[in-house]
Length: 309
Ligand SMILES: Nc1ncnc2c1ncn2[C@@H]1O[C@H](COP(=O)(O)OP(=O)(O)OP(=O)(O)O)[C@@H](O)[C@H]1O
Ligand SMILES: [Mg+2]
Figure 1 (cartoon, rainbow, N blue to C red):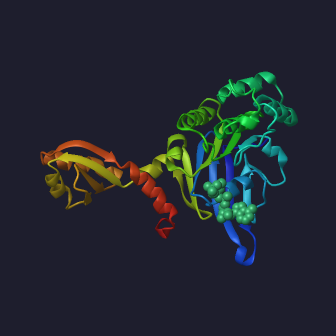
Figure 2 (figure 1 turned 30 degrees about the vertical axis):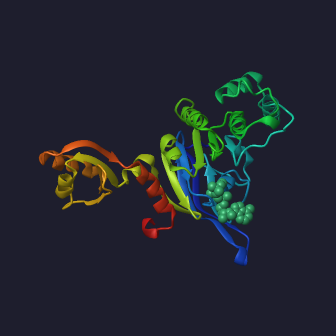
Figure 3 (figure 1 turned 135 degrees about the vertical axis):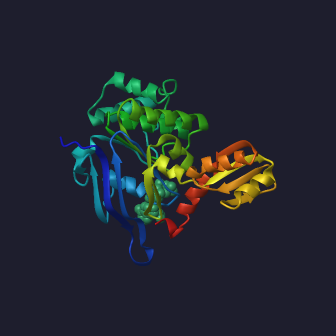
């Protein structure tokens, strides 16, 4: 089997739905690369083209043009390569009158990898041991999501593709899902590709991220690099008016009458700002990259400002 360290390679992918006035360009000239062993986030607002892209990764729909390779092999018309992939796209469907366990058993049998011990281990992994013998009919969204994840793991895939895996989960469930995804990569060496419309979710679990908007790639890179582009700092200092006077020649400042000052500055500026304050005998209580600015950043890049292209 040809193996490479690139789990997913997408090049020049386009998908158009409909014709004429009804035409929707759901994905436009998308290229990205996911290294094996990574947790890779695919971030974009509603309608950005995430699910459409994922469907093309899985050969569920054909691209208008462009190419997808998984582990170095083209995905189109190549069912063998999909044997290495487990996927959960827009929620799983189950036989409602069978229990969760029975559903998994049916899937495992049809997939040709039935092993009751393994099914039980996966059930425990996704935290469903106490509920798995009830009919799936009565499952909550979060429970269905967990079962969906269990189903993706049955065939012991090398690559796991999850479309909005935390949809419908409560905060504790989201936290568990995050830990679980990290574990799949860190302890089991799996590659995980997941989509989300929430930046903080991606930030907490992913190594790399691609941001898409209106079908186009806006940014791709490591989460670390993306976060270091953050450019606002919250400074709590006393006396504040003096801090303002000292910093204003070099940086743009904003105040809201409170105890804080917001400074437009890069990560590299932080030591300079602190030094300047200390040299001027100003007490510093806090210097913090602004949390909201992450959201603001995501909003800015997804709200069609072409300055980032
Ligand atoms: N089968 C289809 N026929 C026509 N248009 C479609 C089809 N599937 C998707 N689209 C359109 O393509 C665009 C991208 O949709 P897609 O479902 O990929 O977005 P998404 O990023 O997954 O959004 P969400 O966060 O809401 O799930 C949207 O404008 C959508 O209306
Ligand atoms: Mg979607």
